[in-house]
Length: 257
Ligand code: CIR
Image 1 (tube, helix red, strand yellow):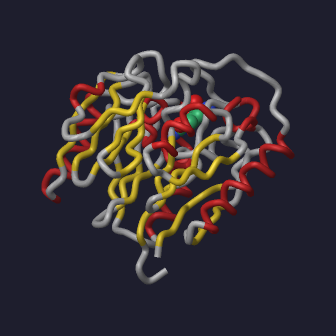
Image 2 (cartoon, protein in one colour):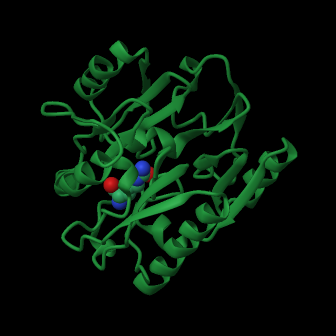
Image 3 (cartoon, protein in one colour):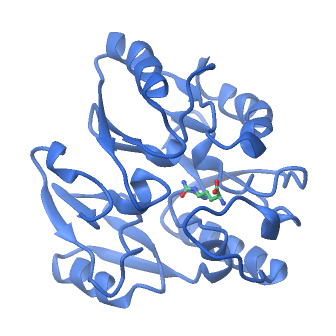
């Protein structure tokens, strides 16, 4: 069944990395309630949650997507681009190791899972402040023997490729084209976010439903007009930490879970 690895919210979340957002006070109790509501939304969509305990030594550890990716064949533990996040990999390696054989990226590679947009067997990987060419090359080296194609996409003005664009399904890439060179993504229709919602390009597709931050009603309406079922979740406190709906989970199929 579909499984999502998540991790509890660190007490230290307000001290995490920020790149394109200004620091704002974070209500940790509210962040925890929002995180629980996010998990509940996934459960309602039929997903099983495998929640890891919070790691207060790592303020950004709730954003599990960045430290590992799980494909049908293997799991890859990344080499996070921010030094403060590298220690998150140890516990994630154990967690994904329950489901798949594990491979690791290693220096000089840096790569955050938030930079990886997968469409079928093609992985578009953002060249960003977190992910370097060596990270993309190592990922390609691990995945091309398994039949995947790994392609680099320039990201500018956004933290990760998935801040700029995500695959909604049915051939539609939801995107803020100003933040990523989406021309390289072929065989998809680009659906632009509403121009008043530049951060609205991040959705988590679960089957035919899209989990999305509640703060983007105009982009949500565009998706609904295209027939998607959108599940809005209030993520205000996690957005202040520069997170969104994709980064809070690693979702994959675990038939025997
Ligand atoms: C960071 O800068 O690493 C965290 N404050 C936010 C990470 C968000 N991750 C994601 O969107 N995949």
